Image 1: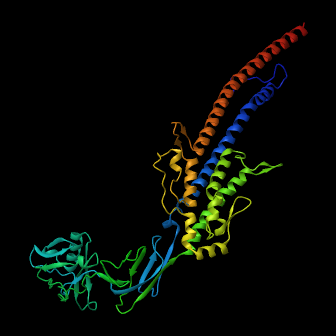
Image 2 (image 1 turned 120 degrees about the vertical axis):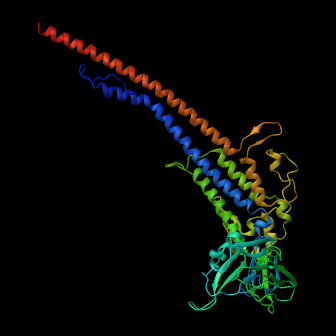
Image 3 (image 1 turned 180 degrees about the vertical axis):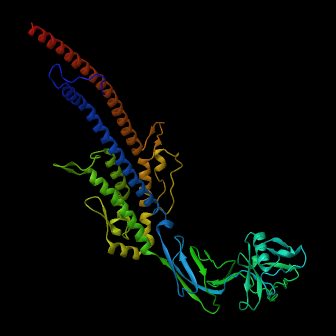
Amino acid sequence: MASPITIGGLGSGLDTKAIIDALMAVESIPIQQLEDRKELEQKKLTLIGTLKGLVNTLRDKAKALSTTGEFLSYSATISDQAAAKVSASSTAVAGAHTLVVQSLAASDRWAFDPVTDADADLATVDGQTLSFDYDGQSYSISVNAATSSLTEIASAINNATGGEVDASVVQTSDIGTGTFELVMAGGQAGTAYRISNITSNIAGLTIDGTGPTGQTAGSSNNIIVGTNAIAVIDGQTISRATNDFANVIPGVSITALEADPLTTHSITVEGDKTAIKAKIKGFVDTFNELAKFVNKQNTYDEEAGPGGELFGDPIMRTVTSTVRSALFSQSASQVASDTAGFGTLRLLGIELQSDGTLKINDTKLDDKLEEDPNAFADLFVDTDGFDNGGAAVGTPAYYVDQSADSGLMDDLVREIDRVVKSYQSSSGSFSKGIFDARTDALNANMKLYTDQIEAKERRLTVFEQQLTSKFAALESAMAQLQSQQAYLGAL
């Protein structure tokens, strides 16, 4: 807003620059007021984003507890941890089981007849070959006489099979005196991954490639025979290409570690109450973060004023009522029909405090969880599945569960979606979710303030130029008068 005209009060004796600055400051007050309003809207926009994040996090926590598989956790233990590693997923069922590890899975391994020097060339002419089959594919390794040492042949096998068969050179006697063997091992364990039909016409590389047949052992060159892991689980003999026996017992993972055909191990699957409590605590902590945010924004002090920029904003009431309605609106008939005492959060030891936060009564929670884990879970989870009656996606009816049963967490997810997501009504009108609508309104206000500020700044620039021109004219007139006065005084 600077003017190219410069005046300094030389003619009038007035500090005209200070006068102009003071007038400009007065005229700038409405602009500052608009800047303050715009800044307030920006703060509200940031806080709306924070509130939306808290609500979405709470929804995610509720979603993770809305099905039996997500809510219930199980643990598995074995009588001898050296025999097998066991774990249980959410699809497991509590019970006792038996395990006998008869054998572990092994990869097929062959050792060629020994040679005295790993770096000495073995082929007598170019084009001699080593052939074998693995995993349904035939391989033929051709070597030249000048590049046919054990080390070079091992490298050629690895390159040809792309690592499916691992070839290496092993020294089988003391350094400096002895013998070396070329060893080939299948990349995967089990009977289906044996190396077969091994032949060599490389002059210095010999092997008996006869593999095992049924119970009859094959060549002594087959130093480890590729075999499946075999276990007897609950009396049933199971064979696997690896040591993994997952889901033989539904929801239970078993990895065999040690074979002992004469020992029966016991496996116990039971509800993991510690894990269930951790999930509930995670939900409660997230709920309390949201409640504390709302409390801070809605507090009011006579001296300090509102606690936050969202004080009194309807979106706060909408969020609070939506969440509380889903969690604490059981009807009297529902409570009355709950003869076992699992029908409300309070009965399970999750109590609503006067400040709107939740508090866990650990003793009561432990007792109810111990009493009946399934009845405990039934309050939280939707056991019969969500049924919206075929309502169209995005319509209000889409968020209403028509099925007979619905857990609190499923209710909460749908209630949050109902107010947060945009949808089209049956009449065809479109309704935005509360956060999108509030964000759009704040952005519109900020744009309005920006436009008003820019308009006032343009007018203020013109006003400053006018002031500067008027004071410059005043200075010029005063200078002429002073000149005339001096002339007349000299006569």
